[in-house]
Image (cartoon, rainbow, N blue to C red; front, side, top):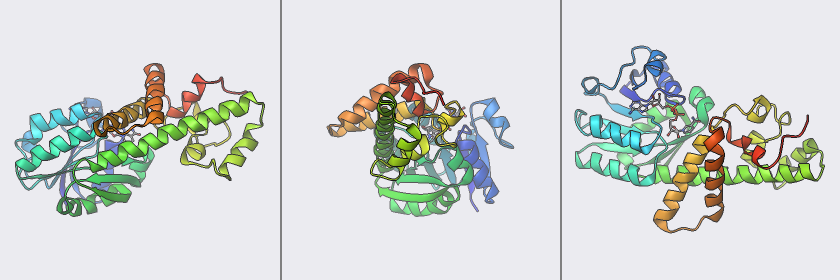
Length: 291
Ligand code: NAD
């Protein structure tokens, strides 16, 4: 069993840290927020003295700036050379690569290992991990990642986990808009939307977004639309991930016009409705039909 420091006990991190502790690992939770700390037994503020001697330090923080700040203030010094750093936050590819290079220059190893699966996947230990970093570090991390996730994919060098996450979520964002527009047009044409859902679910329009994020309340009982659009996956997070995909696209010069449009649409929607599930973007096109 490993001694693990887990930094960031928020919506995702709390469940992940609990899962690791339940699997028998010695987990020290850390968070800047007292409310978050209260939910995890023994959790503390960030404390260098408690980071020394850890086998693994996991970060699960909101954005690249937070991950970089924690590295600057705590992880570039005060951490043993043998400690493996795993960043599970969703951040930009450039920051992930730069942090890994700095960590490696000090003789340690770092993996970028963002996740898909949301709070439900974190609680159930069924997250999908997309991992970048060297092979040895990946093999060291694998048993710990397997506690938190059911699909673990090593994509290659540092940053490639974040690259995979950006591309994956760009597909999710674009597909969600396609589903939204399909249902808006179907409603405007007075189609029976239950029948339309049945058609799409059994035909070529089938997708994860359709089956899990149908925007019309009552058609898919487990979809956020059937519960007042409580997330799920908040539109602010979808907007953030789509912007990360655009940053990656700009870096390589790849043209992604629908990704760019999805980033614009979700960023604009999230300005007012950032806490609603991303499928609520339907309401920018059309009022919800009476059920
Ligand atoms: P969250 O905001 O709920 O939790 C982040 C936690 O980090 C908070 O408890 C906050 O207090 C803490 N924190 C912030 N700055 C800190 C610092 N400098 N030091 C220590 N703790 C600090 O976020 P979340 O929903 O758990 O998401 C975490 C990451 O996972 C994000 O990058 C997000 O994009 C990604 N993600 C989220 C979901 C989801 O459905 N929520 C799904 C997949 C990936």
